[in-house]
Image (cartoon, rainbow, N blue to C red; front, side, top):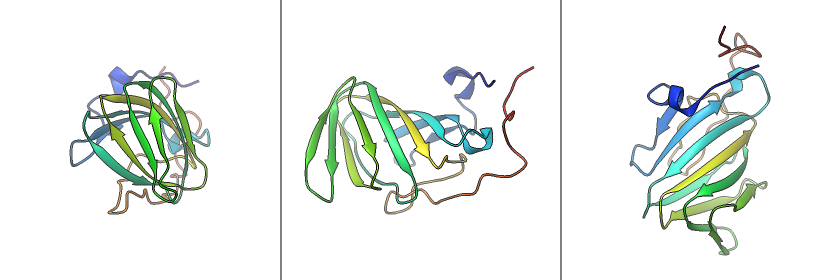
Length: 142
């Protein structure tokens, strides 16, 4: 069993900030935890426009706070987002998230990220292999 709080992740290597200051991702579950997915809490700054493309990952997002929009850059369709909205990037969709207000979302990635990934110039995370020495009990307390 692994138990973590976002408070204990704050200020550690599991808290990753966008170099532009538009978002912060708290990586609660990572590939090294050995469960086959990663789980993040991401906060996006009000008024920011963010281009993403997860060419190597499937991402599911559930918006718990804030409002904004999601643009599918392939089709041009814009989806309004608010608390309780979910979107699934099941086809490695190129997308733009525009935050009207600060947005807090819970995100699941498959395959899992390991925590060292950074977005490249196209908004893509590279596919990074999970280190073999980590696994099921990594991060356990006690």
